[in-house]
Length: 476
Ligand SMILES: Cc1ncc(COP(=O)(O)O)c(C=O)c1O
View 1 (cartoon, helix red, strand yellow):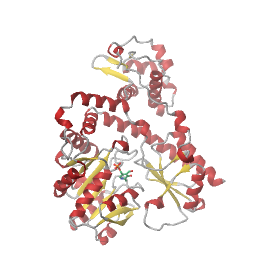
View 2 (tube, rainbow, N blue to C red):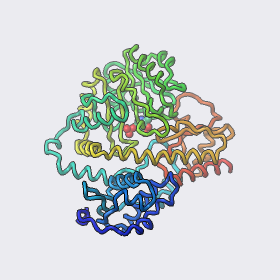
View 3 (cartoon, rainbow, N blue to C red):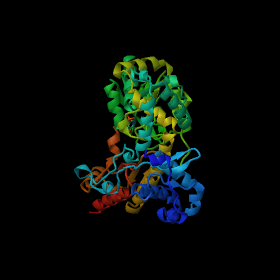
View 4 (cartoon, rainbow, N blue to C red):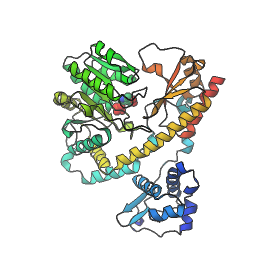
């Protein structure tokens, strides 16, 4: 922070703002984004110097001819990113210099091994990581953290973080969020390892997994000593008949946005899954890997909220902030809680406490909600770009699973197949795609081309380029 940040500079005349931030000339839908980008760019380029005081949101909205809400949102977003500062009664002004990398050229350069466009699913846009807000939370925590919090942490996690998570998950996901049942973990992967190994220690040897499903699940539960039993889906989610017939007493499910098909588990199916769990005295392991992102449907709450004693609920920041943080949460039913916490203690003596405190602060400051809103807007737009590009280049493509999440399923007519040929040709053109067949144990229809396309991490131009390259490769 520069000293000028506490001594805000002069307000330029109103005509200057229109020149600097020509937001009103953008199409209505893009105006907010345009305004934020223009403000960011003006600060980066030094056209708005540190300390420059910005007009009130009402004044700027009037000058630019946009709604006041757009300006307020832009101020909030850029404040969260560290470009702007604000103080009660002191207005908003430009903060200290922020040196963010300009993504344009890098985004369009070829990636490693000749991959020009990587549609492999699983990653959020890492360039949206809120570095400035995270750094601010980190600074505050390091200034305030009592010495005792640098000792070995409670293996369940810092009480402050567990309380903040309980509030967040109850509010956003409908989870029954008792802080006593929360264990802070290093991601869904560790949550699965913990529950898997406790089930194994209690004599379980098999666990059901969705098919098609996440290739991660097989490996994670196999490492805990559990054989995975593939369970088929139908239009409403995990199919109850085969689940009953399988003989398993625990099953992994992704009900908010099934991985990879994108099916949202219906209300009726949720009830039947819980009935099954009760009837076998069993457990559902709910992997809520991308439940925060939904675009044009009502929120689908977590299964755990319907019966917290029959569901172990797992989530993480891997899709909302960055997988590299290795930070997640597990909510366990009472009958497993002590064993899971013991297992966590023996595994790593608890999650790093500074990281936990930073995340708690980040949540308490409202930064996490802001980040989710920001990503939600970006990802919805990218989803729309992908759907439009597929419609343009692949006539009769059927796209599904798009109401939520960070990836979509594209089903292409048989004439584009077989799938292995399609994937090979796309790779030769520099486009990496994952076929749906890589997510299933079943032998599917070899001629059908079904792709799991991750889009959230790609700028719009890249998405268009990738689809165009695939279509050209197929034509060739
Ligand atoms: C369906 C699913 N579950 C779990 C994970 C692992 O998540 P985490 O990074 O939280 O360990 C992934 C990672 O991509 C995933 O796709």
